[in-house]
Length: 110
Image 1 (cartoon, rainbow, N blue to C red):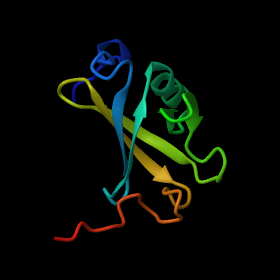
Image 2: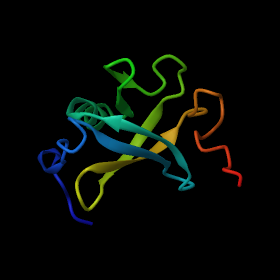
Image 3: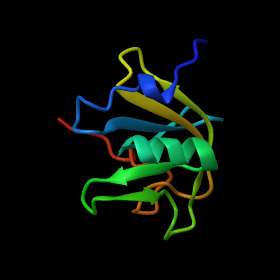
């Protein structure tokens, strides 16, 4: 697998943000989608816990800072365009604010 530096991440397409997909490193289940700025990504790499940029609160936040349901980051992968990242994580409790394991617990009906 090829290595990428944080300087190669393209934060310009979404005004300083990149899309982040959080995936359970053991099961492969997609847990949530959020956004990160450079600070969030750097802090994630430094601390080994999932950090994001809250667009609604306009601030850095660690997943689980209020609930205690943190996500330990095992690996960070970057897509081919450098404008999205994948956090492979070990979740410590439900990820969704609703109490569900994943934010993707609903099915779209016709």
